[in-house]
Image (cartoon, rainbow over all chains, first blue to last red):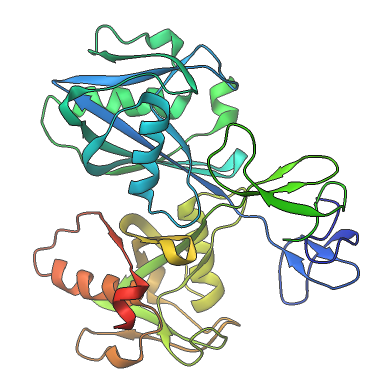
Length: 181
Length: 181
């Protein structure tokens, strides 16, 4: 961030009075520009025991498989966002959304929220951000080609929980420094 | 938003190619400026069956009572943010944070996340954003002076759940249009 969104003048990084961390503050109009984490909402869509995955048509992680998910938009709920993303990426309508997994990803200032849900009539297609979509059993999932750690964790948890037919909500942190080791 | 944070030129509201909603786009450098919901993290700090509340020293809802909560910062987890806010507002250190309540507040593009937790040694004080803090039983809570619907809902749910000693995670939506009726 170099310029103020209110007046167009230069911003500087400084600790505002009464604050305890650096913010971008306008040198002219003194507006403080806060930057906060973003929420990524997604679904774990299930039909007859199989999970719907999407092969990514876009970077990052193009050609790897993901659960449908994306940035939450202003004016929507987390459920609405998760359902919207599932339509956009996999052309599936979903019902009975139950919060399932939350991931803090502090090194990129993101919070993921995945909802477990049913796929209406088992119908799906291929949205513009996917090159391919399909329903997978645990055995058939391309485990070595999963796009993101949060997706891998959510899928592993689901196939573990399905044996007990109990799906407790859990929060976990993805620590990139550990993943890279 | 009037000016581009990258180059300082004017932005216009327009639907970028491949998108389906208006964004602020720079007329010169064409950068798209996304605006996304913000996360508010907080605690429901409990000591010997009593809940820690803070009387707000600042607007909005000055002089009303709240649970310690505030905007999540970049680079932290939701738990770390909730604990930080509890220190800042009530000078309490907390442990055993368990996710308890999530609220979508779409009319102001906010997502609240409250963690149930213990207060270390039952110690607390008054932070700069509070004029008063105290531990409350269900009977003593100033129910008519609670700052926000999300706080009211979380407190009501807690004192209901405490009877079963079971605290399932729940997601709810706060609909301002209904509240105002």
